[in-house]
Length: 465
Ligand code: NAP
Image (cartoon, rainbow, N blue to C red):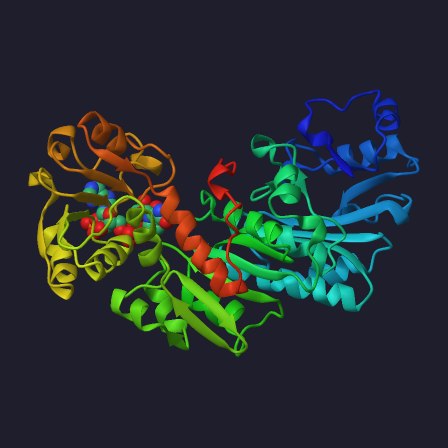
């Protein structure tokens, strides 16, 4: 179906009939006022006049009419979507809004509300379940990045349709996924009740390439699975209300989670069992939902070392400098120490980093005064070089000169300023994408029991965020 957002035009075209006849697909006509997320200031009178002027419906033309107009119009109700939008929150009277709309003669009820955290998807999924049990057609959506799950999983849970934009720039509501991604990345057409659901828990998560890797792997392995970004503000609430099989308020086939910043440590409190290595590292990045238990693992450490072992015959006694003192640095310290390397920590805030250094019994120095000459390996475990720090490097060319290999854990962009400086300083370089794929491969195996095949090459995936 194609939705024509007539409110996005400055003027309503006077050849609408001709346009609608020329399109070969079913159409939804929408004429939304700005206070309900539309693009035009429209009075109730103007909207009444508009709908009256375009009657009667064509065979395959649907109207999306806001709820308050239900008693003003006399449309062909069999092709009306009666809608309610809330762009600020999930209203407390969501059920009553549904009941009010469901009492009209419209064929489909549509409710779109704004999610500010992933738990706001719960009432939407519950509404879908209720409408399904009552035999009522419904479109229920949580808007915003935190609501992506409702857009992708909605149709498999009874939603009449889901909305996709033409491209990333022309979205008509917050969190809308483009139509091509809905099909080619999330395979929305093939998701059903049996689909195993996995996802990435973090804040932010929308930039991540992990959905590209895992969704491609599901296809490659012939597994009915989908991997989604879960924008989570409060990890404890998410685990209690949506994840843990003993407490969750939602019935869904959730089987595995990747965990990223800032939740790698807080999530540990929500689990029933943590593998000993992850306990030592002090952070997890993988959760397996195993019957009614949550199991925690860390695949970052092994994923970080895998690409190194293709370049170094051994890391025994290698001099390794690690920049940063956050979650990735923890995994890096543990992983290279496990390989019997000599590790030194460099951080912008040595007072803060000291606790980490003491925990792993290593020395810690100020990054600003560092010289990496003589080091076999320098690992950047800070976000400097990506996102808002894209034009920055945690170390200058002068600091890097004389080091053998510079390993930047950042994978987007593939070539950071640090790696360019390192290359010019005559060092070998290694970016973070290989690690990302290596740790993802181990996660995939924990969730599915299957490995990426040798022919599978997610490094060639379209990694456009
Ligand atoms: P994190 O827990 O937030 O830690 C970030 C660390 O970077 C903190 O120690 C922070 O210092 C330091 N830092 C931030 N800005 C800095 C600056 N301007 N100068 C110097 N230090 C700075 O993040 P994380 O989870 O460890 O992730 C770090 C990076 O690793 C991210 O870019 C992430 O994408 C990447 N990563 C990649 C992979 C992969 O598979 N390739 C896996 C995990 C992580 P303070 O302590 O002073 O705040």
